[in-house]
Image 1: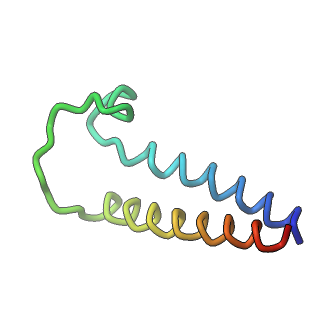
Image 2: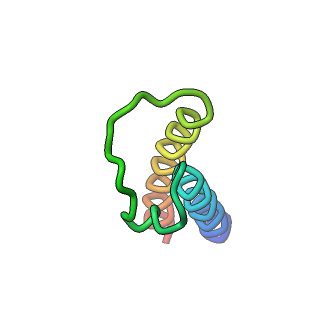
Length: 73
Protein backbone atom coordinates (compact mmCIF):
# COMPACT_ATOMS: atom_id res chain seq x y z
CA UNK A 1 0.00 0.00 0.00
CA UNK A 2 2.81 2.40 0.89
CA UNK A 3 4.56 1.77 -2.43
CA UNK A 4 1.36 2.45 -4.37
CA UNK A 5 0.85 5.74 -2.50
CA UNK A 6 4.43 6.83 -3.19
CA UNK A 7 4.13 6.09 -6.91
CA UNK A 8 0.74 7.83 -7.11
CA UNK A 9 2.14 10.86 -5.29
CA UNK A 10 5.08 11.11 -7.70
CA UNK A 11 2.78 10.86 -10.74
CA UNK A 12 0.40 13.50 -9.38
CA UNK A 13 3.34 15.80 -8.62
CA UNK A 14 4.65 15.47 -12.19
CA UNK A 15 1.18 16.12 -13.62
CA UNK A 16 0.80 19.14 -11.35
CA UNK A 17 4.09 20.59 -12.58
CA UNK A 18 3.05 20.07 -16.20
CA UNK A 19 -0.40 21.63 -15.74
CA UNK A 20 1.03 24.67 -13.94
CA UNK A 21 3.64 25.07 -16.68
CA UNK A 22 0.93 25.10 -19.35
CA UNK A 23 -0.90 27.91 -17.57
CA UNK A 24 1.81 30.41 -18.49
CA UNK A 25 0.14 31.85 -21.57
CA UNK A 26 1.67 34.49 -23.81
CA UNK A 27 4.93 34.59 -21.85
CA UNK A 28 8.31 32.96 -22.13
CA UNK A 29 9.49 30.41 -19.62
CA UNK A 30 10.60 33.37 -17.50
CA UNK A 31 6.93 33.99 -16.79
CA UNK A 32 6.88 30.88 -14.61
CA UNK A 33 9.25 32.60 -12.20
CA UNK A 34 7.31 35.85 -11.96
CA UNK A 35 8.63 37.56 -15.06
CA UNK A 36 5.20 38.41 -16.40
CA UNK A 37 4.46 42.10 -16.80
CA UNK A 38 0.73 42.03 -17.41
CA UNK A 39 -1.28 41.61 -14.24
CA UNK A 40 -4.66 42.61 -15.66
CA UNK A 41 -7.53 40.50 -14.37
CA UNK A 42 -9.55 38.67 -16.97
CA UNK A 43 -11.94 35.75 -16.90
CA UNK A 44 -10.74 32.25 -17.68
CA UNK A 45 -12.35 30.53 -20.62
CA UNK A 46 -11.94 27.29 -22.51
CA UNK A 47 -8.64 25.50 -22.08
CA UNK A 48 -7.40 28.08 -19.57
CA UNK A 49 -10.37 27.37 -17.29
CA UNK A 50 -9.86 23.61 -17.64
CA UNK A 51 -6.17 23.92 -16.72
CA UNK A 52 -7.08 26.05 -13.70
CA UNK A 53 -9.61 23.49 -12.49
CA UNK A 54 -7.19 20.61 -13.15
CA UNK A 55 -4.59 22.41 -11.04
CA UNK A 56 -7.00 22.63 -8.12
CA UNK A 57 -8.02 18.96 -8.42
CA UNK A 58 -4.41 17.76 -8.68
CA UNK A 59 -3.32 19.90 -5.72
CA UNK A 60 -6.12 18.52 -3.53
CA UNK A 61 -5.32 14.98 -4.68
CA UNK A 62 -1.64 15.52 -3.87
CA UNK A 63 -2.51 16.71 -0.36
CA UNK A 64 -4.83 13.75 0.23
CA UNK A 65 -2.18 11.30 -0.99
CA UNK A 66 0.38 12.95 1.30
CA UNK A 67 -1.91 12.57 4.29
CA UNK A 68 -2.63 8.94 3.44
CA UNK A 69 1.05 8.13 3.02
CA UNK A 70 1.74 9.57 6.48
CA UNK A 71 -1.11 7.53 7.96
CA UNK A 72 0.08 4.24 6.46
CA UNK A 73 3.74 4.52 7.57
